[in-house]
Amino acid sequence: MTLKEKLSEARQQKSALFAFNFYNLETLKGVLRAAAERERAIILQLTQSSIDYMGLTPAVSLARALLSEYRVRGWIHLDHSNSIDLCHACLDAGFDSVMIDASERPFAKNIKITRQVVRLAETFGAHVEAELGYVAKLGQDTERQGFTDPARARIFVDETGVDALAVAIGSAHGFYRGEPKLDLTLLQKIDETLGIPLVLHGGSGIPAPQIRGAVERGICKVNVATEIKNAFMKQVKRSVNENDNIDLRTVFPPAIKAVEAIAASKLDILA
View (cartoon, rainbow, N blue to C red):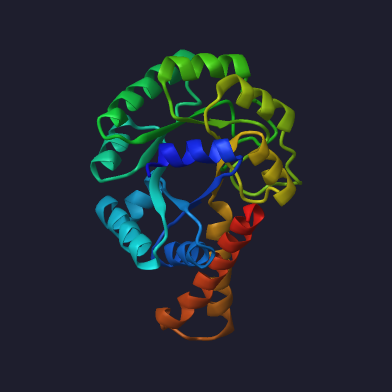
């Protein structure tokens, strides 16, 4: 089953896939252990910075090998690329899906760039995600608002042919200063207007009831990254501070378990 088919199925069933970013072998293992134990399909995500760190071919090979080892149904997705060339390279490397994020460009330019990637991905039979609206990235102003307008979103989808759309409804990347409040009324209107799978970015820190409410109103993919990094690094720091052990093979396993616990807690929201 392709990711496009899986997300369409999720929309019909009012369910969603969690999409977890991974950064190394250890974070990948933690995510996959949680998915394997629950027999849940997931999406594995890589950003350009993670690809630069791990290497494109090693990262994809590692993800494919561990998906097979843990017997997890999963898809590999390029998260937040602003480069058509990177999308092409990832598709050549065997990614199932790419996100082209031109959301900070003018509306017409966002359409043009996204349409190019959609046409490129069609030759690979791959899935394409784009973004419309303002979802604050790390270091950006979380107080600024630029929610997705349903009418403009309709034009965007019609003009680009994109498979899934990340929408701005009150979430943000990174940690929240207070409890986030998603505009579920707006989300429902977007869903009714577009009729395609919608994506929630900034899933770290959003309360479970809001995630369930968003899924009931059209969200089919929920991204989680910040909590994965945070759980891993906090446990590594704790282990290093508690003793002088320099053996990575004993320092990293507790951090893998910390990542597994975070991934499990997210998957259990939609159990």
